Image (cartoon, rainbow, N blue to C red; front, side, top):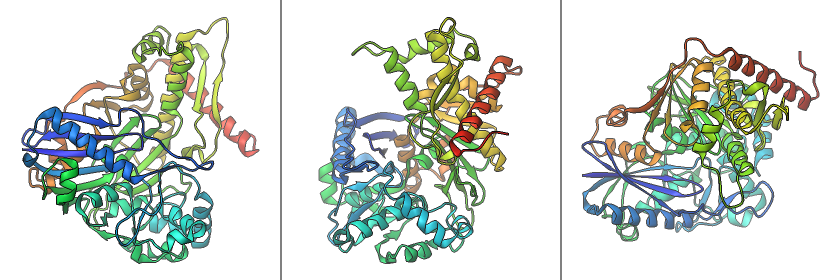
Length: 506
């Protein structure tokens, strides 16, 4: 018997098949092969057609079934992970009323700021753990203000994963974890954020019914089963946003455990035993996948915009036309230089405002460059170290909030495939990094197995067949050149931020 999981990203859809009894990944399929389009009809806008997600889900599923030859009737349950913070608006018949406003769209910033000021910082942070910001609730208010003819027809709003589950089952529902990521959950009152909805002049009836994050959420309809190539009646047993799901896939479920990713952006995700917030709003807090009123585990998410995009930019700059240098070659070149990059420092913040830096945008910056001394090796190592320094800077910030850990768990992909990058973080943070061969879609599949009765709980589901493929331990004597480089990097960052704010450091 098998379990199937999906990762509904903004660039592609991944589908993973897992053997239920062993927990082993059988295969992963992706669609499309090239990145899905993101529409930006105006500056700072980012939209996608939800029907494109559904078509990609169907294509990836059929590809997976064809690839493995598995009988669809042997698939017990379905799990869904999805891009967070999006807004899908549907009418009484379930028809999509406008393109989805997705996570990277920033049109609603001023709306969230105004609501934050009216409700008060203390009220918002204690109730919602976040400012309304540019999240789903604020995006919905934007629709009300700017497209009233559409707003009047809205029957329900959904997050991207809610919409895919709706297309599968025909039922419109959501989860506490999902509402919290849209700043639509009141942690203090243990109910939807009715005060915020009232402030935004939005009726509570637009919110779907609640279902458990992990549990019986619905069953695959006959119509959807035909489109997907699966069996009608298959249980839909799990749904969560991509970052809490990635943490869960790495068995980060309890306080003191940290997960990290290093893709286009970088993320450090920690679990707190109780709702916690940062008054400076440099991190965001959401209900974790195992949150309940009795056990209010909260996920604390730190995001760094610039990291993967900085390394990709460097690769493109060093590559010839149409012939990109393999990342393995970049790693080899960087390894020929010494820790500290011979005094060359890189601030990797070149992809917009950074939330962990108070929404300031210091930009990417290369410092200490000596043209007679520094070559490709130093530049590559400097970029890798600069990105690693930004992770450590964020981890230290979380530690000052009381969020600590002993181990960082990561997937075996993207930046964490670099030994230089990973070892730099381990040495400077004092944390061991455990690298696992898993994906968000695999984690979603396993989590659905809890609802299907295959595993007793999420921890058992995730630890089953989850063994580190590599570990990076802090060295007893960190190279003094690396320590000094990090100290100088933090000093330079502080100077840049003070300059942006018109203040003088010190």
